Image (cartoon, rainbow, N blue to C red; front, top):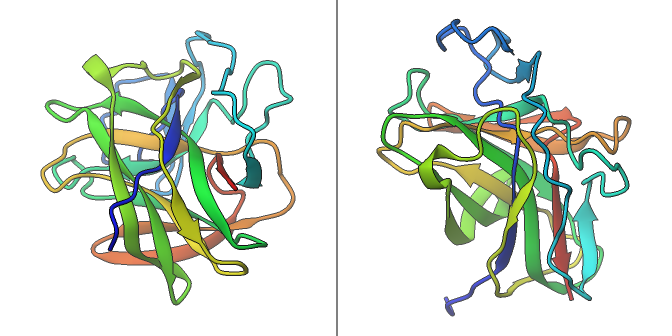
Length: 227
């Protein structure tokens, strides 16, 4: 496969990692649901950086970022889990699907994801994947996203990081944006829920024990751009 790169904008923001009772209960700001699918913050720290993205003339292929909201392009206080295999709860990944209406070259993907805690790991993996019978399949390309020094802190919002490049996609074909972890990672991270579309559900999937499981829900906050 020809080597490809892509521009990824990372909204480093409120991070609500795995929703599970296996986490320590010492943080009074956080409510962790027992089903392992969601985590909620009851008192975010209020730190906010106004959303500012890199200028681009490329078209939106798919997006649910609430860019018209003056105080947040995603739901600050709820997220889907992204945890490493060395974390107390084991490995949880999250993916969101999109389907291009026309043939395109993806030039930018934006995700709302952030860091909560770890002892040694400060990065997650971001990839653009093909579909495999309704769940994420092989990655077309994978990139590393690093949270320097464990920043941003839980409950803050919205620094942007970007990488440049291109990945071709076909019309009327489902693809997946995946946020995962490395083999020895102990990170607790999360992909924030979108708050711009609370009616139309999108396919999202979670990975645990070596298996992807698809769910209909509001899904995480992200956008895909191309030309």
